[in-house]
Image (cartoon, rainbow, N blue to C red; front, top):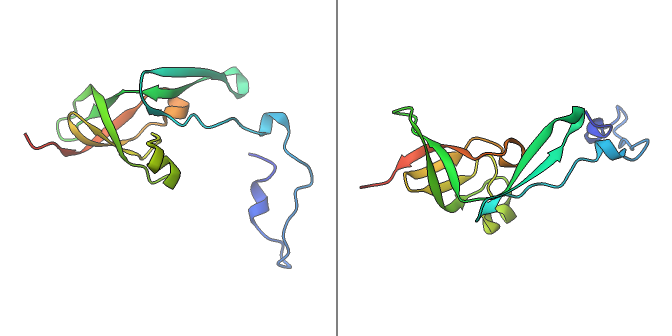
Length: 130
């Protein structure tokens, strides 16, 4: 938990809380991966406790699961349909958790966090009309 987590709350008097110090280097956090559609590119970063995080910078395929049959297969991403996380991400076609992508199997919703997990997993929403 960061030192600035309680600053969104106010004092009992109604006054604003002020930070007693700036964030330390290890509290600052990193830059977002902002995964886009393209030739596969990944970046490995070291996290707290020595763990390694794989950030997906660009990817053109996703593991899509069909909830009815329970089968998962790797399919190519055609385009990013919608991203409700950020209006700018929606415009630029950035893939984050909850983003809707169009695949060969149909419309799917991303369930993994590409910036932290290193993979793009999705669940089928609608099947394409054959």
